[in-house]
Image (cartoon, rainbow, N blue to C red; front, side, top):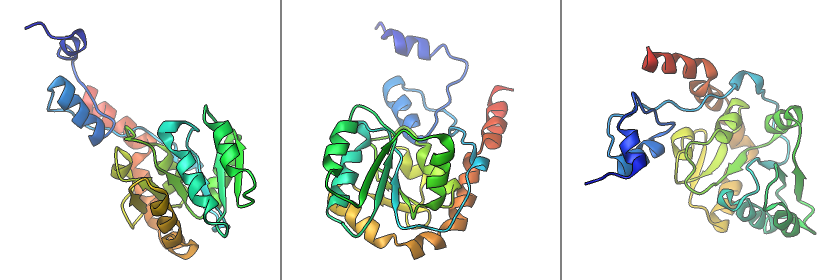
Length: 218
């Protein structure tokens, strides 16, 4: 039996490292390789900061169908008393802007500078990040590093990052679930998650990443 080239070459690698349990399962499924260490992607957690919550939730995902930002925006059109700020851009931007049109509680900012991004993270109540089967997901880590919990989809690598009801919420990606999650994750509950968020985010620091990589390639 002749193996496909990618499977043949995979067996010649000295070492394969997965960036999440989610990706490790894929490697096992498609390449039949079982013993794979996991090292999560590094995040510069030190540059993020915490400020007391202001009256808005934040979406930072790329405006792409796989990130399901339109679902978040649609949910907030049904919650006029809750504010949403959407940053980033992508092929879905025009659609997102059209959905948000005439809804004063939703602001679509597009690309922002790094300093503005860090500032928005520091001041939001929580972030919302519900992509389709994400490999790992750095956005939830950046949210936690800012002391802010993150509402994530209950699939893919993001469930390895966010601890349900401790540093955010795991939800099935539906409008009604986003609405329930936002109503549950009040500013007061978010504040109580601050210290746990910051502590967990440190596990994904650049220093930890470098140390773990060195242990694998020594």
